[in-house]
Image 1 (cartoon, helix red, strand yellow):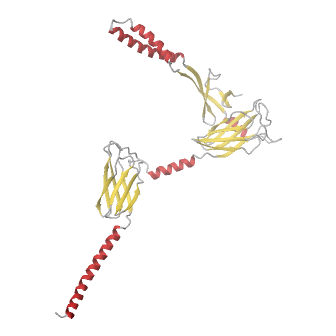
Image 2: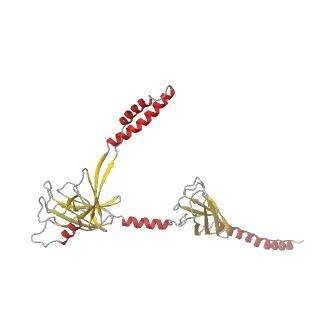
Length: 367
């Protein structure tokens, strides 16, 4: 065969092999590119259980990129578990709760979908328990509660007194968060004035100036409102002394009426004191002596032990009764609808049905 024919055959062979090599390289590149493509999760759902004790089942479904490896980890569960790809891009799996698990309705469930060396992650929003709130619903409720719980005062007023010596009365009214604890302090007086919630979010109260106070017209007066563990303070922007020739205040009459109440109940409260070791020892000695009169030998020993134990218990109870304390609680219903409970060390000078007023944290008869 001459050289020309050999060269022609060589070129033909290269023409056949080159496309095959090119096709193989392209396919390999495409496969490599596909394996490096970032996985994607389109959805992650659960069929919640009717209970979260051992034996109950949670059924998870994940929708995402096909051909991956999917797993789920539940907060409170010991191990993660796999989801099987039931059809292209749809992964399903059932987790049976075990005795060692501590799974709650709002436990975080996290799904991972792996393709090659890349992973996509999704956190479940739904609750794991039938009928329970989802994680997003719990967060929204917590955010709303936190917003409501921010202490604030919308209105802080005083009906100033005509004079600021002993016997003069200052009347305060505040609008703030419902269900809060509200108090007022005046520079020049000791202690604070507790205001009562006479209507939803409306707090009112009065203070009768005493001879020890050193209150001036411009004394700094501060209101504090507490909601849970949070509190805020506000300074009064009015003088405590009324201007000469002022018109009668509607606030004074409203607060005065709000402080009026009727005695609804008077309860005698008895509290046993704690028995001390002295009472137990004294009772135990008496019990042992009595027990020693019963039986002979071992019988005597058993009877003494039983008597000592019984006597110790009895002695402890006797001492508790001897050290018992008593006090009275008067429940007064305010005209605004709220109630106030006042404690008395001795029998109070009131009867059920008496009309009273709440002044500086105590009850006085209505004049």
